[in-house]
Amino acid sequence: MQTSIEEQAIIASAFIIGGLILGIILEIIVFARFRRVIGKAKWKGAEIIVKAFRGIPIFWLMVLGCYGAILTIDFVYLFGVDASDLFIRILFILFTLSILLVLARVTSGFVIHYAGKTEGALAATSIVTNLMNFIYLLLGFLIIIQSLGLDITPLLTLLGVGGLTVALALQPTLSNFFAGVYLLASREFKIGDYIKLDTGEEGYITDMTWRHTILRPPARYDIIVPNAKLSTAIVTNFGVSDNETALTVPVGVGYDSNLNFVEQVTIEVALETVKQVQGEQPSIQPYIRYHTFAPSSIDFFVNIYSKNLRDRARIRHEFIKNLFERYQQEGIDIPFPTSVIISKK
Image (cartoon, rainbow, N blue to C red; front, side, top):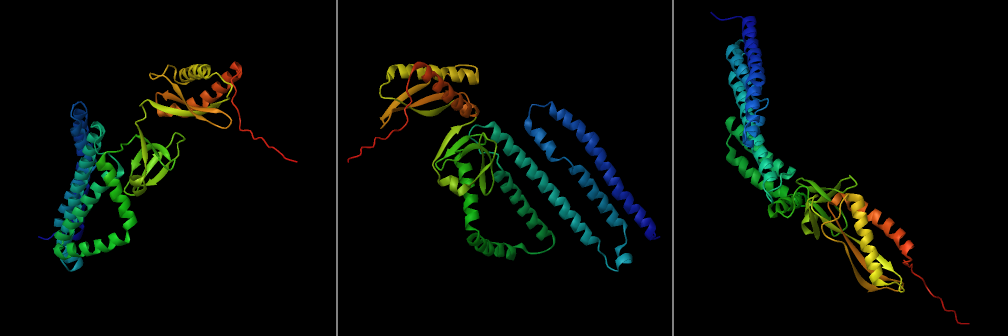
């Protein structure tokens, strides 16, 4: 005996609602307990896998409920044609995409985990995760085409010809993409490194996308550098932020100065300034190097070592103030350029 439309609707709704309720129960109770057990485990990979399945059980049981609902409804009576096969294919496509989503989450999670764990490994940047997501998206697209009964061979040929055309049209964009891949593969930089370009831009590397690299200087604004520019630039890599680095301050004193006394006073001020800013003496002692007999002064560089890059600007600021005050107390002259004009009458 064939059931009525109302009965079919009630049974179909029961399948869908039942799948939703079972999915929520599985997500809240079973997976919550499983996550607590995994949280006590020493293997980080188990936590990554559990996070990859977040929200997926609800979706899968909803798909299963929809499948039961499709088998219940008489599509021929409702629409005049049997559309159940079409809806089942749609559910298969959604189920396939959800599996690819889980695989993408697991892959990205492991890459980010081991990239942060291994020194000098491939950085866990946006370009890496986006590339993996694109691969899974392309794979899902091909699976969908195949599931619809279409031959993917002509499509692959079309993609090859069209890809060549697109590559020629998007040459600047692709050059940035491949430059970013090269920079990551060469392991020249890592997230958190402080770099300075030959054009003057400097900052911490916070991310590398498919098109550009983002630098963030201590002033907390972002500098967007195209990857192609970065790959051809002369770059000074200061390393990570907790490495001790040197800063150089140019100074000049008058020709009547006692250079040994100037050196002694300058180093004392440098040591006091570092202790004032960072609370301790630097592990590497500051030093000065005379280098030029300038027109109005004898010039030299003062090299001061900072415990981290964040304090460089403040150390320079305090050192210049303290040095100027100390030179005034000691009678050391800091000359300014002068010009002598001889007039012949």
